Amino acid sequence: MEPIYVGWLSILPPVIAITLALITKEVISSLMIGILSGTLIYAVSTGLNPIVGVAETTFSLMASRMDVSILLFLALLGALVVVITMAGGSRAYGRWAAQKLKSKRSALLATGALGVLIFIDDYFNCLTVGTVMKPVTDKYNISRAKLAYIIDATAAPVCIIAPVSSWAAAVGSNLQITGAFESDLAAFVASIPYNLYALLSLLMVVILCVCDLDFGPMARTESRAKTGNLGAIDVSTEQNTKISEKGRVSDMIIPVIALIIFSILAMLHNGGYWGDDPAYHSMAAAFGNCVAADALVVGGFGALLVAFLLFVPRGVINYHDFMAGIGEGVKSMVPADIILILAWTISGVCRDLLSTGEYVRDIVEKSNMPGFLLPALIFAIAAFLSFAMGTAWGTFGILIPIVVPACTAIAPELLVVALSATLAGSVFGDHCSPISDTTILSSTGAGCDHIEHVSTQMLYSITVASCCFVGYLVAGLSNANIWLTLGVSGAMLLFTLVILHHISTSTVIES
Image (cartoon, rainbow, N blue to C red; front, side, top):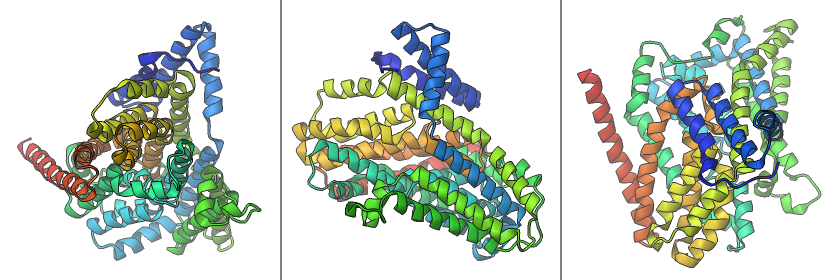
């Protein structure tokens, strides 16, 4: 299937899918309609049969875009969660953690801190943090939507400012193509202080955890959670599971630690750390060269094996119940698998069939703008493209080769800021897009309804992004003065949060 250029029609499929999902609150059918609209445009434009051609194109693209390793990891993680629950590990850990974390605030801060600590890969972050922290946040009646938001806001935003991560490697490979920097790593590190969306997202998480300044749909969700309705969609699975009374805290902690250790070792191994090429004998280079999805499968299998050796010989779970738990865990991940496959497919419709990226690139190249507007405009364009395609990696992969030479010609003094704006906009669009795999995995890890996660965090993401846009305008006007840029955008975020919380509280009182 050769890509074609259809202009503005290339943005229709994601617009249709996202609009339907937000209106109907049903994501699977919305994604499918969006995909079919895109393949119909492709079939009509290339002279294919409008029925047979659409079906063949849709399922061929679906098969080619599917990441089997991620699906396997989801299945293994679902199995691990269920067998740990059956062993009583989650219950024991929840009781222990509730004794150590004495308040809702400490539980929220611990969740955010764990999200920051797991900076190697966003997929790994989303699913591990949810698995570990659900028993604790449930104890303090924290809604699953709030948990999903914290997971999502400490996944991609942390990875994009971590020099040792799969995201840093992806950015570095795109910077290398431009040939504009002596050191790709140095250029990436230089962009970190100007990556306003990542920094302000983390600041917002801290503020919300410490000051409880929720607003909008999240405030209503948190108010509902105080009555015990957490919005959990995995309750039925947990309620139907026979839980052992022999469970200990170590039955939760040891398999999770095993998952982390095996995953990191597998990343180093397939990244060439112990290989023949000396270029990858440093940890940073090996992490940059690794295939994270393949490593996570090895980590998930290793953790499940450790759980088997920990539970079955002690009689915490018998052999047959352990195997039945694996089946239940795999089944619990089927809805997430379906959503992910459809999200990958609609991303493929945009990138591989309808040339959405090329359409946006043409808009950028034809625009004649003052140099000081460049960072803010790049941020907005990257955000739109990432939101439409549901992929930050695909967005900065398209824009970096365009932004670097364009900025070098128009405003070379803003090159690092423009690069940061590209990465920040890509993460913002990915963060709030309903078809982003990170968004889907965050709701899956938290056991939260996907559309509820999207609708509750959307206003939070837009609030941060608005402050970022102003910050990039300040950066352009001040010739990249970092302290002025950070000071204005940070102060604006804090002021906006206080105002929005006051408005939200007043509305609740009046109603």
